[in-house]
Image (tube, rainbow, N blue to C red; front, side, top):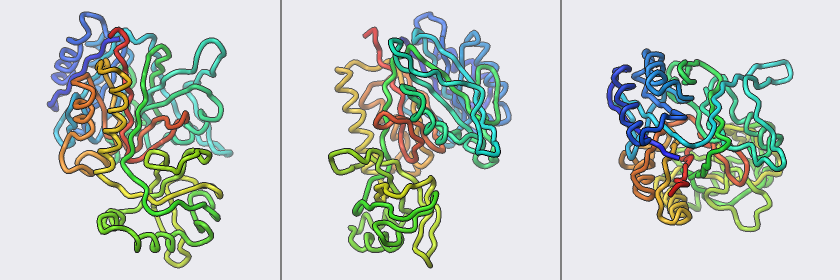
Length: 394
């Protein structure tokens, strides 16, 4: 396959579309784009329709997904405050099916509609790669991923939760030449070779505990004692640096594979924020349901370990590629990363360029990232989730 990328710094929708399509298309060697991914900064909230329509027209109606995001990435840059449009075009990656989904609440909980994930069929391979961008207010992506893990063998989902509408509680999603304000948009790439990489932004501290009493997202006991008591005991044993990181806000990691033979390390957890606490009972509330019997461990956000984890993931991938640069990549990184975590700008996109080469990259800052770990799909926080497209012709 061939890919091309463009990062355009302008707030004019027509100019942005023209420049982005021209620059990204130059790398396709004259082949028409078969797929487009488009991300725009919040400066395009009022002109998103004009932008998407122009890009769709200039690409010949190529299948397209994207969104307005709080910040966008292109190439080795991450643009967190300026007007910016990031466009990624691909050719020769096989069939592409774009789709929209919605979640309809019902008396028994709710139902997903608009697209059906095809089941695995023996002899035809897995269900394949799906890229998805979801509205955090109207689409419970975590519930969909849990359903796919149980019922649709082989389906891999990567992407993120749209972040550009957080202030107004309204997202703008791109699908082909249109703008949607809820649900989710996606693309099925059944024939594309895609490598899924997930790097954590938090690391475990203290000891692991077993959840001994919980109800939904409320944890009342860890190893028979209130979580706040466990947290205070742990804080007293930490280094000065870890104590400072803990004071900035603790998180809780849920072990993904309870049956792994080795002690769980960074990357082996599904990290969830602690969203509330009751000093009287010592209970805590986390951003997601927890079950009795699960193994958990407190986590801290740490720029140093986040850098090390992404570097380790990319170095391992570079070794498997044998030094051959991939055709391109899509980057879904958390709004809690970037300059909110690292001392300088462009960290994740820059590290991608440093270790894998100056390849076409487009991405956005997400309000939650989608990516597989241990063969299962999850909704993450503080991660960098990367869909990497190898250069098979190389």
